[in-house]
Length: 225
Image 1 (cartoon, rainbow, N blue to C red):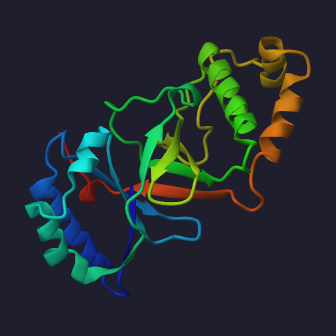
Image 2: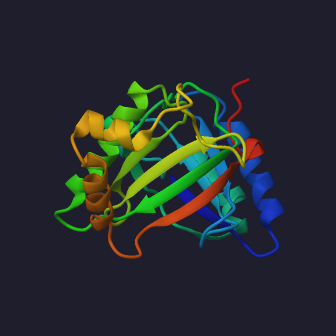
C-alpha cells in the first residue's frame, strides 16, 4: 500500500495520469492495482493505492528499473506533491472473517490503524481472534481483514472493513435475536467478554487509534470485466 497526495490544483491531472498508467500496465489479475480516495481522517483528500495479494518474492524482485516504474516517474510524478512510501502488510487469517480475494472491491472501506503497547499485543490479538471465531460460528455477514505491518514503518495493525452502503450495519447475524455478550461468555467462559474487552483496550497505545473512510475509485483501478 502507498498514499499519494496530488499537487494543489492538479488532482484532475493526477487522476488522468494514474488512470492511463493503470490501463497500460495494470490490466491483468497478476498486475492489478486498486485505488481508493481517502475521505475522512487526517489524510483526507489523498489516494491509497493497493497492490495484492502477492508473495514476498514479487516485492523482493523490485521495480525500480522497470518500464512501468519509468512511466510512472515521467507521467505521474509531475503531479505528485507527496507520498508516504510503500508499506507491506500480511493478513492474519485467524483474526479475519468472510475475506475473499476473488470478490470485486466494495464501494467503501473503514480503515483503522492501531499500535499496541509492548508486551500487551497478545491481549488485543486474543480478543480479535475470539471475536472472529464467534462471528464465523454465528453466521455474521460482515467482512473484516486484519493485517500486520511487515515493512515500511513502525509496528502497527490495520483493521479493514469493506462495505457497500453508508447508514446500514456492516453485517448482521443469521439469528436476529442473537445476543453477542451472552454468546461470547458461553463460548469463552464466565465474564470473558468484560475481561477481554478491558484487556483489549489496555493493550492499545494511548491516542494511537486512527479511523479513516475510503471510497473506491474505479477509474484509477484495474478493471477485469
